[in-house]
Amino acid sequence: MNDLTQSRATKGILLFMKKNKDLILHSLMCSIGGFLGGYAVLCRGNLASAQTLNMIDIVLGIVGKNREELLLRILGLFLYIMGMEIVILFSKKTKINLERYSIYVDMAGFLILALIPEQVNMLIGILPVFFIISTQWSVFHGVRGYNSATIFSTNNLRQMLLALNEYAFGKDRKQLNTALYYINTLFWFHISIAMSYFAVKVFGIYASLFGFVYAVPALAITAIKDEKVSGSISFDIPLAK
Image (cartoon, rainbow, N blue to C red; front, side, top):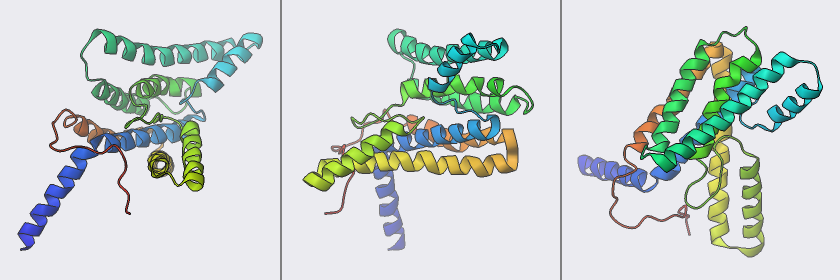
C-alpha cells in the first residue's frame, strides 16, 4: 500500500513539473537575476542589471574629466547591447535553443566573475554581468502571456499592484491569477538577493559560483521543455475554490 501511494505521489509530482515547467524555469531565472543583482552590488558596489544609471554616468563622463571610467562605461554599454544583439541574430539565423544558450552564458559568467580580482576597478568587475544580464533579459522575459523581466523588479511590482487592485474592486479571478504570478516572480527574485548576501559574506567574489545552484536545474528543465505532455495544460495558476 505504501509503495502504491509513493508511486502515485511520484507520478503526481512528475506530472506537475511537466505541466508547470515553464513557470518553474521562469522562477529559477528570476532567482539567477536576483542573485546576480545582489552579487554585483555587494561585491562591486554597482547594479549592472539596467543601463539607465550607466548611460547617465556616460553622459556625465563626457562632460566631466574621468576619461578612463568613461571608456569602461562605454564598454559596459557595448557588452549590454551585444548580449541582446547576439540573441536577436541567433533567433533569426539559427535554430539554437536560446534558453540553453542563455543559461550557458550564465554559467560561463559565474566562472569569469570568480576569476576577477577583488582589487580591480569596480566597473571591470561587473563587465561580464552587463553581457550576462542583457542576454538573459532578451531570452527570459515572461511566460504564459505575462510580460515580466527576470533581471529587475520595478515593472513586476507595478503589474502585481495593478492586478491586486483590479481583483479587489472587480473580483476578477483572472486578475488574482495575474497577481499570484507576479508575486511568485518577485518572491524568487528577492529571496535570491538575500541568498547572495550570505554567500558573499562567507565566500566573497567566489560567491558567484553559487549561481550554479539555480543554473543546473534550469538547464535540466530545458531538456524536458520539448516533451509532449498528454492532456491540456492550463495557463492559469490553479487556485482553491
